[in-house]
Image (tube, rainbow, N blue to C red; front, side, top):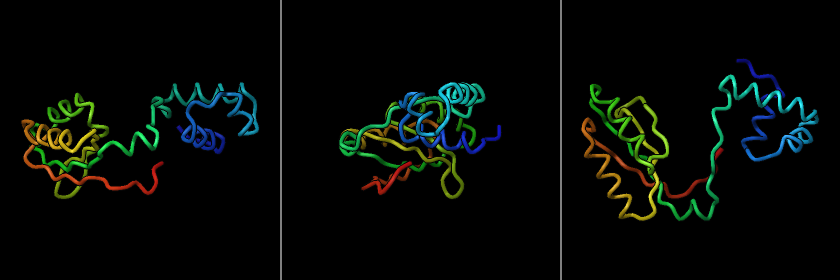
Length: 143
């Protein structure tokens, strides 16, 4: 689906505040509520908008220990590794990557002990050959 300038501006408004009312969006975008409602419906139906989520406040996010876990995976067991990681609520995202490793998991835990246990659990999964973990220190910006 091709996005026109209004679609792009609408998506940017939703990135800033996914809870904005259609009236507020219409006001911000200088268009009618019915136009916004129709655009939102179309963007959801076509899969451009795949869902809405919660972003933690800065204070809560700061208390979490976040890390990137690089995984080297046996290709024959990659699907099983993905399934196992999907079940772990501490794994926020999983990406396949190019280079020395095969995947990168974005993870979060409340304590270093919990992070250590999580990384051990991931490393012990059948098919995971090796992990390399980088703890995130600060986030300069996030979109």
